[in-house]
Length: 611
Image 1 (cartoon, rainbow, N blue to C red):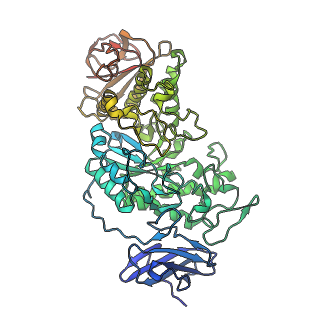
Image 2: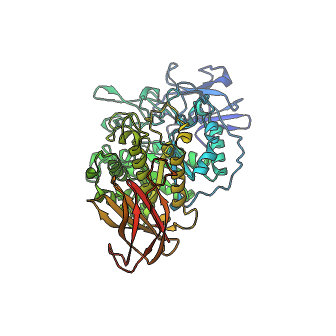
Image 3: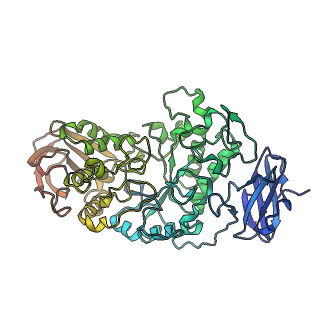
């Protein structure tokens, strides 16, 4: 009889002369491993039971690149290792992998969270076409100088776990620990992170733990050791999944968070990205569906839809672990429920995320941009969205945006019409004056509101093609709309206090002091400590009307200088270039502020001022 291995670790663990294979299969009567190292002989290498649901064996002669699979209880039941770090493809074999990558930038420091400007991108459609298979990561590297010049200091990659086929958004993972083979593989991802760090850009990654799949039969963990139950006459997923009504999600089967082995799998996957690949932060997909079957906040704690609290506790455990090991790396939730406890510390019962996506901000601002008639824009709602905080003391507990993969993607159920903002504003004429004016108006509000601002790929070049996961960006728009790209660059630099004149945009404090819903004009004050170079005042006009002299309150006396006028004709030749001049704040109070001044502003325009 074989003896279990005494070496630690799960999956295939290389050592001198061979490798240890260890796998969890609690219902198996026997487990064997076959691969290129034994000519795929299914009976030669039988793993030993460790008595706790795990099986292991040391096999001589195994080396990097060997392919393998487990055979469990039946010579026709071949399964890919759920912890395989590389696979040949989504329906192929596991690959024994160990990296010899040598990091060139090993001392990268992520920018302070209040200085982050995030650029969300999909690996396969961001680079210019054509990009050959397995060269996707390299093609993104080639665009890093462009992103650096634009001013973003973090990219957020849609999920990279191996998925079925070669085209996907990535939210249907089938091999949790393996990199999508068509993108270039594990070391190619390390090189991409390395190049980004060399350009001063952090790398965030979307991760999916609310469901595996959705094509359950292709998933490496589906009915892994053959045991499973039935629910409503349908076979369920076995040891890695709930086997009843709790498994059902709209996009795949839910993992069984009540099993310690499943929780450990997810925890180890989180740490793989942060430690092995040097990823700088994670965005957790659909966290509401991890803590509650229906994503519901209103049910009692003991309601069965809360999964016995296991999903909630899993998220707390993972966030505590990251905070202990690498606290400078932000954990971001896509919870979409306006739940402040998501970003509260675990010590007081919260989930411990550092920030969460603010879907309400997006919906409110987008509605104000796309409404055909000015009278249908709600200045009060925009003002409330600007001022909103998930945490009273920390403005950066939320991520704010007008476009993300969900809001501009081609899928059913999108309440915003599945379109990029310019196309949504003027369907069929996305390059029109209205589309350019109002989409950049929204972008300026994003860059000047409290929170972590995020762009979606191509937004800065007026991309209007619907995101579908297969059509590449139209990079010719960079040359077609150079002024729009310049405006985004200018906004980002002001947001990051590039010229030491707008430090308040990195501060926690916001006072929306002027809300004129009749004329659709708002004004707000952003500041950190206050004073020259810190105080920033933003005047936003959501109507197709210009003002030669619009009076608002100002927090301090003295000169106020225009740092950006989004109506400048340099951004687009047909913008009106309406004069927006520096002003002197007099001592007459207005809008509950001690001073006031008059400012010129064009239609659908944002003016940014500071001292």
